[in-house]
Image 1 (cartoon, rainbow, N blue to C red):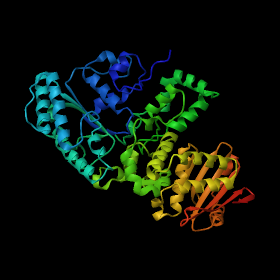
Image 2: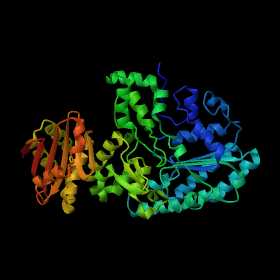
Image 3: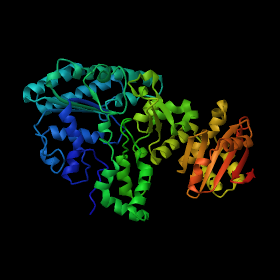
Image 4: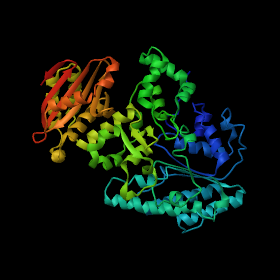
Length: 531
């Protein structure tokens, strides 16, 4: 019988007591415990941050029996410590007053659990310092502080207008005062270990602006594979599940199956100094459980604030395939001036694709098919708000391309454009048409690449079928022949010749005023079609 995969819990105790599958991450935890006291790590949601908090809780609570068979079992003394956990997924944060009340309530519960006196009518900052000191004095052991998703009280209010932005600022002020206790001289000797997780950096929050001894693991090469699953871990821990999955999916062997799993769920790189890629853990487990490829990570939450931040930048969406930025962009930043590129990376929608060491830059891109398809889907439906019939038209469009019925493809693309709200065409240029077509193809799950660099330029878009390749160049107010000539002159097709598939060069001309395709010209090797 296959061991159950822990899809619906982040409780280490439950996983171990019930014998569910656990990928042993205690080698990294042991390294943390031996080499420091205060740590921060930023990772996307559902990457194991909360489970790590749970592991640390059980370790510092002295529950050695839960670690039998794991790396750390015979290397740690498991001496019990008082442990305070602040999970901001569970702490109310609608406004600063509610946030303060919720923090106080949480500390009151801990005071009752540990049977120490809880002061009345004190601020969260004062109560935090008092309870740390009281626990240390009573138990004669350093206090452990575990903070999960510290930035939840901030990011939940972003991209929702000025009023919500002000709440985010006020919540940030509350957090600055609260976290400021941990760097103060008043409790430094009473702390045994501090571990903080989140998605993003924000300035004017004390744990980043003033806490000098907080070690940031976010880009640390030794911890690039701490959270998420490496391919070695997938093969080591999930082989029985993989065998069943691959057989049911009809793959010839594990290698062929892993190639598809890799395409869908692998690709996250968390350090510019170490090229190790990890799989999205929740997606891998869901795929193996349901026996099908799907977009599981996006089903757990919708990046509403990111979509809102991107609404004014839809013209740049294809650039996300190859976005070159300096590492400086990932340093702490202001709420009033959010770098969307950094937010997209830290939230898991982009990852490090390659490093330009000479220039001191990194190239960001989508980590895998799951993220690319799902993110494009959300951007298209929330950004353009087309009617539901657009999806059917899009499906017919791709089928027409595959059948090489270019006349029908042109008409279908015009039908789709007619359903896009006219307000979006106020700033229309070839970029808008490019974005619409790019999003359509991606939400249908086809293998597309945009803004692809070649030795002689950057081509607009490539659409790959198993047995043929389409190379697109888009022009607004200029002829399709001119677009086609650019593909030929720049030799955009040459890098695909080694795939030994029929290659179609497609020039598309748009009429901005009429909001429609004016002309399409297609070349298949030495034969040309005009529609």
